Structures are given as structure tokens and as C-alpha cells.
Image 1: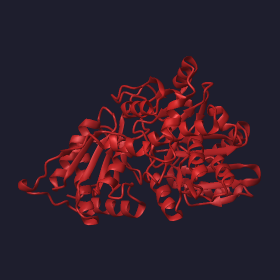
Image 2: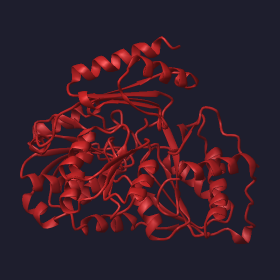
Image 3: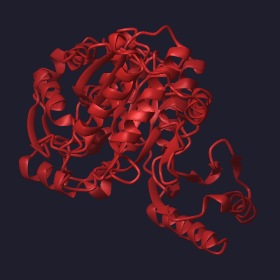
Image 4: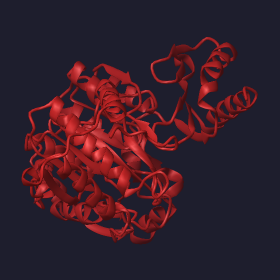
Length: 461
């Protein structure tokens, strides 16, 4: 029968996500998977659907439910097991599947899970296709397969090896030079899916690895989002071990955050800036990022005399704009790097390889790499705010904060180029919050503007 999604389920271009048990149950996951299997048959040629998951405790339970739902409508299922999200998306593209489902809530806490829905091109559902699927969920009753048309499940445990081979074969990554450097890397995988794969990648690149959070049991020892504030233990590990760089990945391994050799968390925005430098040095071309990414990427693009285009937040939004622009590199300021030469997907293992290459290129540690570019301070805050009041809030902010370049394509973005300052206010697609992001030349200016905006918003409700 058609499905009425629970009101406390987060639904966006990132898929559907929520807390385990309420609203996410195996029954709901199975229903959504069955509908997706039927929907993709109406959209494409009927190839297999690949599934994978991160390390969350609820992952195996939901994986079985998703497989059952897909089998019930006659879909052929290829199960990759526990893999990084970019590994699954690359496998879907390479193996010409109909689509895929990743069972992961990415950076959300351990009591959350989600379904990320993937097209046959190895990217997430775009807005229009996502809307068609939600209409299908609400209106259609998936046709169940007869007993003799239920397909057996195929297991594929080599997807990561294919992904790894693709990274190591990139012409931008000089494996020999990185190996000769013997870089000591401190690594925090927050007990997510990244432990085994990041260890193997760094070993192949000749790194000496000092690691924490490597048991992929889904019991995250800290807030799993790899923001600077959450990386205190990694910062200590860098200092205690004399590591040249610290890497932190999120549970599904599509975001990479950096710590420099002094044990200072560098945040996530420099990940994309450093990676883009590696690509643009060798292959200058257009760059695409989202509206919430640091302006240091503008500085990188300017240095190589290439255009930079900004898209709404959301991996698929950036990927689609990259295709339009013919971008050679892109991604999001949350540590997500997309390299079209590999695939149109945020990819933390790829980003790690490019960061190591960047250290070779600059001939020094991360602090030396960062010193090549202007320094900015970016501050981010999540607030509880009624979404129905956002249009009124945007109008009020525009009136109060004048002389700005205004962008309404994703919430409200105000830019003051002469002051190297911008503000972005938008509803989150992954959490029931509104995000406030401000960047300015120093933290005092950034914090003052953010506090001013937060105060104005308090007066709206």
C-alpha cells in the first residue's frame, strides 16, 4: 500500500533519516526500499540495486530489512556490506546498476540512521527525481514479486579494492613520491566504516599511522561530525606522536577534516582548498562548491585564473552544477571533495590522498600549506527556529544588513566582498535545525555578526 511518512522523519535530497525506533523501524525501512525498487524499475533499465552501510549498531538490522523489501518486489540485490558511501556510489556507476541504497546517517549521532538513495549514474537523487519518488511513495502500491521471481542476493566484497585502485591510479597522486616521504599521519575514524579502508589506503601510500576510533562497531566515542570542536583527542594524538598531519573522517567516510602538525584543528574548509590546489596545478579548469564554503576556495581559484561557481548546499546540487560547468574539481566546505575524473561523489579516501600529495607539492607540513592563502575565520551555529517563519526572517535580515550581494537560491546568503565577509542562513536538510554560518577576516568580526543575526532571529518568534 502507499506509505505515509512519519512527520518526524527528515526528508530531503540527502534521503530520509531519523532516530532508530521512532520513526525508523525495520518495517518502515523495508517499505521504503520496496517502493524504491519498484520506482527505479519505472525510471531505468532494471539492473541490480547495490546496498551498503556504515558501522552503526542498527545497520545490520536495517540492511536485512532493506534487502527484504527490495527482494519482495523482484529486485536483484548486490550487497557490499560495510563500505564507505563513496565506495558504493562508485560501484553503482562502474557496474551499471539501476541504483543503490546506502544505510547511513553520515555525521548524525549513533541513535540516528538513514537511507541515502542513489541513481544508476552513481549520484544521489536530484530534486526532481526525489520529488517523483516521494509522489510514488504516497500514491503507488509496489507490486510484489511471486515466489518464483524472488532473486537471490549477491555479495560483493571487492568494491573497496576497486575504489582504492582507482584512487592510486590517479595521475595527480604520485604514489612513489608520497611513499618516499614516509608521512606520519594521526587518524581518527570515530569507530565508523573508515577504520579498515583508511588504514589500507595510508599503508599503500607508505604512511606511518597513529590511530584512534578504529573499531568499526558504530559506538561513536564523541560527536561523529568531524568539526574542529570535536577533534580534541586527535589534536592531542598529533602532538603526542609527532605526526605531520591529522585526518578525521565521518562515519560513512565522505568527509575529511584536518589537524596541522602543531595539533591545531584546521577545520574542514581547507580540505577542499588543498585538494583543489593539487588538481588545478596539473589541470586548470572550473571549480564548483556550495554557498556555505569558505572564500579561501575563491582565492585558490583566482590563483589559477579559473572560474568558481557556487551551488545550493547538498552533494547532488554541487555534482549537478559541476557537470554543467565542466568542473575539474569541486565539493563542499564540510570536508567533501569531488573529483570527476574518479566520480561525482564526496570522497574522504580520495581527499586524504590529495592532501598527502599537496604536502609533497608545497614541501612542508599543513601549516606551511595554509600560509599560502589568506586566513579567515568561519563560525557556525545551529539554532531551533520554526521553518515556517524563515521567509519573514530572511526579509528582516535583508532590511537590517544592507549593502550586501543577495542570493536566495538556498535560504539567504549575504556577501560583502569589500569586507571579505559573508553570512548564510538556511534550514538543515539533515537535522531539525536552522544553520547560521558567518565568515570574516577574524573571529571577532565573524562572531559579532553571528551573534547579531541570532539576536535578530530571536525577535522574529
